[in-house]
Amino acid sequence: MTSSASRSDRGPSFSKITEMVNPSQAESAVTIAALDLGSNSFHLVVARAISEKSFEVLLKEKLMIRLGDVVSKFGYIDELHVRSVIEAIRSFRTLAESLGASELVALATSAFRDAENSSEVVDLIEGETGVSVSVISGSKEAELIFKAISTSVSFQDEVVMCADLGGGSLELIIGTQGELLWSHSFSLGVGRLTAKFLQRPDELSAKDIQKMRRFIHEALLPHYDVIKAFSPSILIGSSGSFLNIARMAISAQRPNVDLKMLEDLNQVSVKRSALKATGRTIIKSNTQERLAIPELDPKRVDIIQAAVLVLDELMQMFSFKALTLSEWALREGIILSELEGYESLAGGIDSIRHASVMGVTKRFAWNSFHAEQVAKLALSLFDQTADLHGLSETERELLFYGALLHDIGEHIAMEDHDRHSAYLIENSRLRGFTPQEKWVLVCLGRFHRRGYPKPDFAPFDHLSAEGQSVVVKLAGILRLADALDRSHEAVVDSVRVEIEKDRMIIFLNADGDFELESFGLRRKRSLFEQTFGVKVSLGLD
Image (cartoon, rainbow, N blue to C red; front, side, top):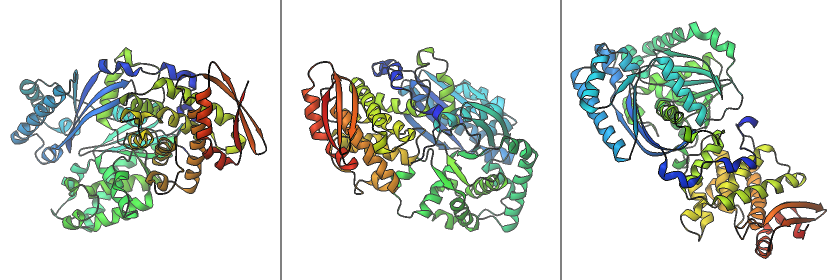
C-alpha cells in the first residue's frame, strides 16, 4: 500500500502524544465564523478550534448569489443585488452568533474587486449588518487558499500546482507542503468566461468553444515558463466546479459507486482520461442533457462547461495526468489564519494527519490513557515482528493512528463499540489521508476486537487485495496490543518478542498483576496466529 504522506508529515513518535491538546479543554475552545463572499456563491463556515491546524465544523451554509454575472454585465453591483447581499450577510451573522462565534471574518473576492461601487457597497453592508467586509487582493486570496490546501492535503515534499476556480477568477499557486513559492490571479472565472463567450443561452457552439480555449491559453501563456521552471508534479484542485466535475467523472466510471464515497473527495485523485471523457460529454450537451448527467450540481449547469475548458487547458498545458482534490479552500484558509493568532492553540500537533486524527478523538470523549498505551505497544510489536509482516513505515503509521482511534465508538456505547468506532471513523473528515488509507483505519476500528475481515464489510471490500492483506496483518497486531492493556491500567510497561519457527513468545515487563492481560491475549491472539502461522504465548522478563 502506498501513501501520499512523506516522512516529514508522518505521525509523531509516541513520546509526542502527551503534548497534544487535552480533550477537557473543549468548553474553552475558540469559535470562529468565516464568510467567503465569492463571485458565484457566498459561503459561511462556523468552526470550533481544536488546535492551530484543526477545527470542528459546526455549520456550513451556501447561497448562490452569482454576483460575478452582475458585475460582468453592468460593471457594478446593482441595487437589487445589493439588497440580496445585505440580506445574505445579515442571515449568516445571525447563524454565526447563534453558535457562539466570537469572531466573524468576512472577505470578498473577484466580483467586489471588479465592481465600480465596491467601496460604497462595503460601507452599506457594515452600516446595515454590523459586519465589516474586507475586499482582498488576488495574491491574498491565493495565500489563504494555499494555507487551506496545504493543511488539508498531504503532498510530501513535492512541488505542486494548486488551482482554485471561482466565478470571477482562477488562482494558481505553486508550493511545497510548507512554503508558497509563487501565485497569480487570472481573470478566468467560470462566470466571467461564460458571460463573455456564451452567445446562446442553451449551449456553447463549436466557435464559442474554440474562442474560449484560445482565450484561456493566451491568458496562461505569459506565465508558462515561470510555472514550468518550478516543475510541479501534482495538480491539486479546489472549488465547487472542479469538485463537481470530479464527482461526475467518478460516477461515470463507476455507475454503482457508493454515494457515500462521493461525499468527501479530499485527497482523492481522478485520472485525466476520466475527466476528459466526462468533459466531452459536458461540452457537447445542451442544458437539458447536462441536467441529466449523474452528480451534476443543477446550480452549475450553465457554468460547468467553462470549468471543463479551464481544467482541460491546465492539464494539457502543464502535462498533468491526474487531478487531486482539496475540499478546503478560501473559507477554511480564513479560519486557519485566524487560529494562528491564539497562542493557546499553538504547538503540539505538527502534522496534517496527526491533527486530523486528534480532532476526531477529541470530539468523541477519547480515553487517551488506554489509546496511548495500545499505540505504544502496537508500534513495539510491529517493529519486533517486521520479519513476519514485511510491512513498511507507511503501514506502521496507519497502525499508530488506528490504535489511537480504535475505541472512539465507546462514545456511543460500550456494547458493539467496535462497530461504532468504524462508523465514526468512516463518517469523520480525516484530512491528509487517501480514501484507501481511511478505509484501512475504518477496518482497524471494526476488527480490532473480533471477527475476520471479509468483503461483506464495504470499506474492506473497497480495498485492493494488497490493502486487504494490510488490514488483516495490522488488525492482528492491534488485537494483541489491545489485549495487553485489557485492564486499561497500563500494567505492561514494555514487551520483548522472540520468534522461533512456528512459535512467538511475548515477554512482558509488567508492573503489577497482568492476569487480565494474559486472559485477553488468549482470547484475541487467533487472528495473528492464523495470519502469520505462529502460536503466541506469554513470558515474563
